[in-house]
Image 1 (cartoon, rainbow, N blue to C red):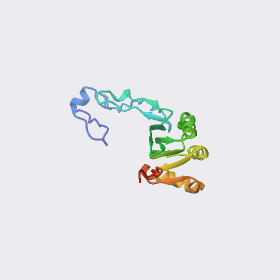
Image 2: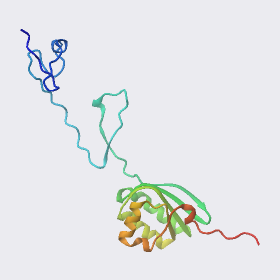
Image 3: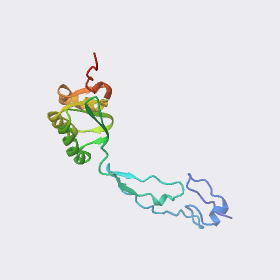
Image 4: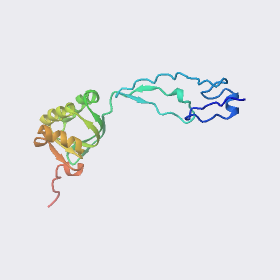
Length: 180
């Protein structure tokens, strides 16, 4: 009489071919074979998992550190007597360290600075402090401010001293009339 072998799915019998070949979690003697899986790495909020390519095995996945800076001072251009800077990403202590000096120098060199914040995903008090410092050096205008940043400005009262505009076009200074 052949013993009934049980598989991993709630006691369903394994087909004889699978048990004879020694496949699956049941040995030839019918005993459950346990396998210790490798412990996955502990991921912190600063880690990201590298995307797995379709032809790689599951064991090749590994945690990689996130880039330090997600904040990017992107496209910069002059328009209607103002200097427009597109900002995107996370704006916090780590990401603003590199951009702080560049933004302060730009503010000191131009009469009107428009920050396009439509692509900003996060901002904290470090960014708020930078805005207040830049405001001292130039006419600072914020365009396309996301809701979470508007909330930060409202909670701190900074919305009373900073100029907010829905779009970059509306933040630009009015051009002087030309001709008679």
